[in-house]
Image (cartoon, rainbow, N blue to C red; front, top):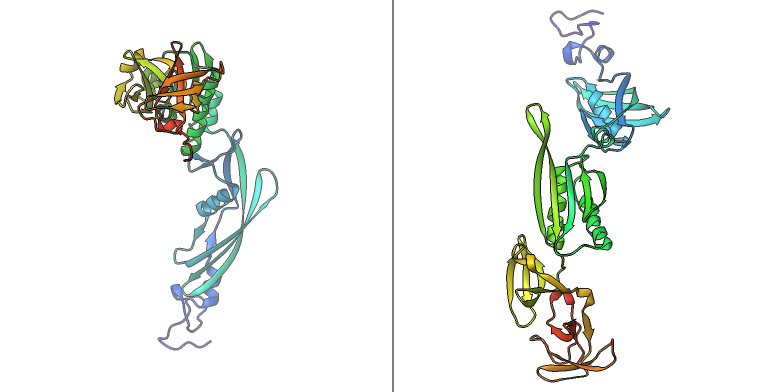
Length: 358
């Protein structure tokens, strides 16, 4: 081949233009250019106990498809001048531990389209994540103690309180330390041992919001690590001995808790229209005289401005009761039995009173 004096030519074979990067013709550039490189084998680790995967030193709960994508992007090296990269991958499982990843790569280098196919073997190894290691070693950071004030809670009430932990777990992020190490009834209550202080505090906030009561935190030092104290949290939740809508004896009068606050409850007086806030310390002497499910809803046979007559379902006799301050003609009555007498109660939002049709 004759070359024009002073003209451009391929530095490899001497071909005339067009020339591309590094002053080579297309055949020479293609022969000497690799669009992408992947290793023949790449390892990955799955926890043999729970199945989560280690990614860049962190354990994550991801699907196998996400694992293949992660391995591809972690191991794929493309030409420094490549543009418009397109990838396709087909995993083929050959055994429980080995999967072949068939990879198609397409990209543009110096305005030339390159297409390549590669195969990478993903080798799975078993490991044990930090969470499972800690679970196996009965690791814990916090103990939540469920207790009650004023009265002993029933097994059903403890079951209801415990179920709220499952509700909290469903709403929280998928933190591997959010696990239960141990739980069970103890004298006077129920204890739940948890892997995370954060989970314990989140549950405590939920309990006080839902059922009122107080949370008391105590931290104890159990050792030192890297110069820092290692502590464990004991979170005591003390549920009030009453629920919203119960009737309690407090300050020598009958009251009903209407709502919980951060530090106590909003109380409504039975005798007249009066609401007041009270702290848990103020309510320490409150005594339950009737639970809301024990209250009786009745139809009045006759009524005037102050007294209504109704049929006592226990004796089938006609009884009289003083009507509460909020009573309106034709509405049902809400009653309780106290000191051998019937007492009419004002309705609260929690009672959802029914009204007669006029």
